[in-house]
Length: 294
Length: 294
Image (cartoon, rainbow over all chains, first blue to last red; front, side):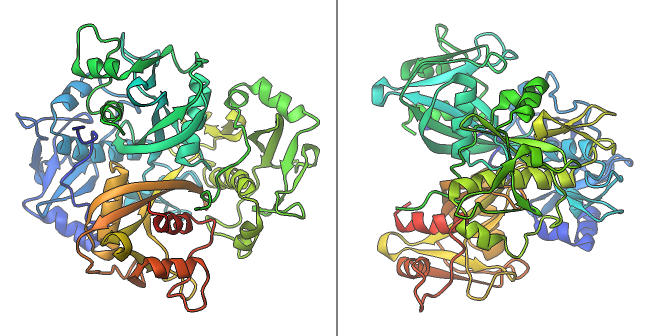
């Protein structure tokens, strides 16, 4: 049975009504039970086990604005909108922390991480250049000059396995980006563009990166990816012709692998033909779901 | 058989290699066969039939920058990045034009419309407030001061039918926004937020707007919506309890309808219990697909 996709299953109630009412937001801030996400820079700090660390809200830094992540068991949970030192990147240790973190808590952290990064990079009005003010409990910014309202970006990304053949003989296409660790292969992926459907973006990316032509695309699952704020949309695309033409700007290598090869890789077999992405990446879930017949 | 979703099926080859090479972009601009999208403000002008009107690129306004939409049969097709007088809205006549426009041409228009609107509202760097420059053949902006690169937004929106019961007895939940024309009902919808999966956003929106609890969510299809640049993700969500609690800020009314009622509405029956959205809206496709067993 496939795991739930990474960064899903947060216990947060996003409590939109609190965002829309400044008085409700102030009441949540004044709640003596209110909690503040414990951060090291913009990375999570664990509670000693596999959960997120939380402090009393009173310990919030005086100079950082607060965003209401939502309610957990009715208790307001906040993050400080601290500076983002990574500029879209990731700290070297974040993946090791995520590997330990309980999935539902990773999803809660993802909301904080995406909000922090968005505020850090969107302090000015894109419409007129004026510094903007935070509103809606940290879920938006408003321009005091032209009144334009700005909301956090979520960038849809398609990630897909091309599939050649059927049943036990089927193989899927995996590729590696130049930045990957040695032997790591994953599903191909790319940003969806304006005026594309999911299915069209999958077909375009497969053709651009690997020269293969999708004849049919089926959706499998989705998850957020908070570096800084993608929506990962996982699909499988049938192809009739398995000839690969690599785009060397995007990929170092690409190859077709069988069900047995994917199963060995997920099992961490010593002689596996590739090393899969981490378990909290949707490509891992996509491999699992493909083995299960998705 | 359901229609293809609206705004899909463009014949454009997006030709990313031209965007990435300024010399290739200049060569495309200099191509004597190059075409320019004919616009009335930011609405399309038809060619006399059901196709988009195109002019010679030489007729482009001197004061508007150009974006390369892509290649059609190898010929570069451009749009001028004109001012957007609608400010995210729609002109009164646009839906009548879209009703006539060939679907593939509507998809080509959608790319132009989303790009025009994005440039009009993103002339300044959100990171530092400096006016930005267009790059990548119109598919991005770059800050000359802090070097941040900005790319067009695509905002994912979930749109869904809650489904109660199964088989011939199944009913789906439809609602109407205060702004809808009389008798118009549609699927419920809302923006996906940072750190949500598609399935989680569907469940949250159904609960927020109608008080129903999704037990299972299945993806159906997707399409772009260029007002200004949404990715519409259509799903069906099973619910066990059909009691509705309306959010009056979002919806005027909501009700459960049977397969016969949906079929009558799509057929335009005089005594239909509601008027469906236009055919180029994904809610129409979602109704069709539900009737077909999706």
